Length: 534
Image (cartoon, rainbow, N blue to C red; front, side):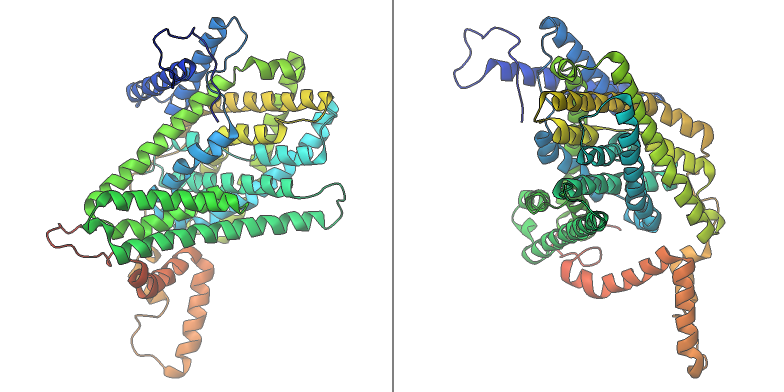
């Protein structure tokens, strides 16, 4: 949790039930949060800065001040803890990401998002693990086991979706935003699932079945985590639709949505599933069904409340990471020279570059070969931005590093583990500050912006889609009707999979799901309440 350092002598008039060190630490931290909000507002139009970088730099500055105050003995006002991160800070960020996502654009590109977020992460995981095994041992680090190298692959495969999304604009670059956003969330979930899968396997008696067990564990965690999030989201929609709490108290509606969303995350962690994947899909389901079952005032409140909690958590994370990066104890315990530290960090970051390039360009090429329509192709410039924007590493990387390397059994392994933690911190700081500041100008230089679609594709229209599916056709030869219809649907599913699946999902949703769970068009009517225009 929170670890406080006493920087000032106790106040003579301090109360007995409050710790002076706690008050000092919280005052410093809330001051930093407020300062970050103000500076972020002033630099909103700046092309080289975003709030993640500002929060990280403020944390580094505060950590430097603490080092001077304590005569370079400690920078521990607040220690970055994986428990604090995974239990309290990450859930509101991921839930709001799912709750605010543009579902139509997200699921329109769902195939490529899954390919990048799942298949691509697995490719990156394999390359980074193998590369780390060969290169780090060549540098001279010899006290790490096979599980440690696999953990390094999972740790460094996790992109920083928070910082990435701050440099992309949903209106100006909708395709990039959708792909990078969706891939970032799925990538984080996949990395954590891979990390948990590695931790659960016994490599002391590994054989040819170990890889299959790892794949089976991953698929099990991925599918069950997604199903749990959808189930809890549907449960919240059903409860609010049947009870309609808003007729008595809108506060209860908001409270129930928050509690059930957080409960889904905690149940997933209790069952050793992926809480990040669970709460993400819970947010998507809640925005599709539950949000339409509450009063108009609750809808406005929930959107702003979830966005505010997410913003505070994001800022808190980067400030805490910046301050904790200057924890002198970690750097002393690594016992590694500056050359060794730079060599390991450079090796890890080079593996990140190679691992991401190994799946972004090949998958995009295959996708373009399969779907040859001009307006759905991912151009090379867009591929480069997707590769570049996904190179940033953040709090998930540091949290997983602490989880894997914080406790070591022997002195030699302790030094190597501390070196891996500090190297991960260097990778996070370098990628966030350098790549984060360059990404926005790079996008402006190489990526043309299209606020509105430049071309019109008739298959985007639902009526044209129905025509292609032979659902609006006039009378035709009855003997050939079924065969032609089946061939056309198969052809549509192959050539336009996302649109075809979306059309059939809408039919199923309108006929079966919304009458039971609510949603747009199935909202309980309250006398005297203004109707909402959709």
